[in-house]
Image 1 (tube, rainbow, N blue to C red):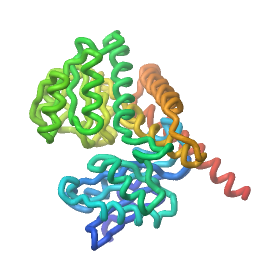
Image 2: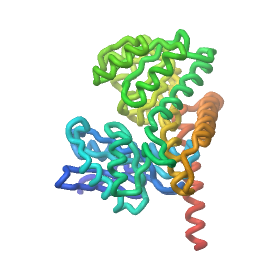
Image 3: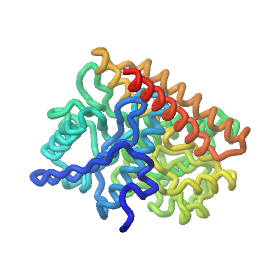
Image 4: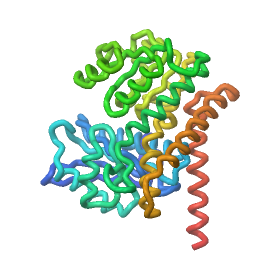
Length: 365
C-alpha cells in the first residue's frame, strides 16, 4: 500500500483536512485545521496557481501548523488553520467563487475562520461574508480590522530594529542594507518603514509594477528575482512565498541576519540549524510576522463581545510579541540553541497546556 496523507511529515497531527469543490464557480479549495486547543482555528486564505493538488496540500498543511504556532506565540485564544484555493488569482477570481468558498466554510461549523492572504484581499473576504460568519479581516463595521498587512509589516519592522540593536548596536536602520524579496501587500509597507528608518534597500518581485512603485518611493535598487540571494546585504527579508532558505540558496547568502514576513521560510528544519552554525541570526518567521493575526484577533474579540475593534489591545499584544522575540534571541545565546527550536518549544508548550486544560474541562462536563 502506498503512502497516505497520514504518513506525510507535514500532516503533523492535524485535527482535520477538508477538500471542497464547486463545479459551477470552479472552486477547488483545501482547508487544514491543525489545532483548536486554544480556540477556533484561524488563518488566511491563499489563492495560488499550484502545479498539482499534491503541492497545494503540502502547502496548506505546512501553513496550517505554522498558524497554530504563530497564534500560540502571540498568546491569542485561537487555534491554527489555513486554506488554499487552487487557481490564478489574476484571472480566475469572481464574487461567485468566494461566495462558494464561504458556503464551504459553513460546513465546518466554526472550527475554522478564514482571512486574507497571498492572492486574496479584504474585498474577497467581504464577498464570502455575504454567506458565512466564519471570516475575519473585514473592512466595514465597528468590529472590522481591515487589511492586516500594515500591522504585519509593523511587527516585521520592529523585529528588524531588534536585530539592528543586537547585531549592529544601533536603534535605527541607518547604513544597513536590506535585501527585500517580495514587495506585495506586506513587503511594500515594510519597504517604506525601513527606508524611513535609514535602510538602503535592494528589492525584487515578479510583479514589475510593484517594484517600480516601491523603488520610486524608497530609492531602492531593483534586481532580478534569482539575484536577490547573491547581493551584499546585512539583512535578508523574505516577504514572498516560503522555503526560500534551502540547500540551493544557503551558500549564496551574504547576510548576518534573516528577518522577513514570509511564512515557512525554512525549507526544512535543518536549514535553521545550519544558519545557526554559520552565525546567521534567524528571526523565526511565525514570531516576527504575527502582527497581522493579532489585528484579526481584535476583530474576533469584538465580534464575540459585541464591541468594537480595539487598536490599543492590538498594540499591547504586538509589544508583548516583541518581548517574546527578544526572549527567544536571548535564550538562543544562553542555551546555544537555534532560534527556531526555542520558538517551537514555546509554541508547543502553550498548545499542549491548552489541550490538557480543554481535555480536563471535557472530562468534568
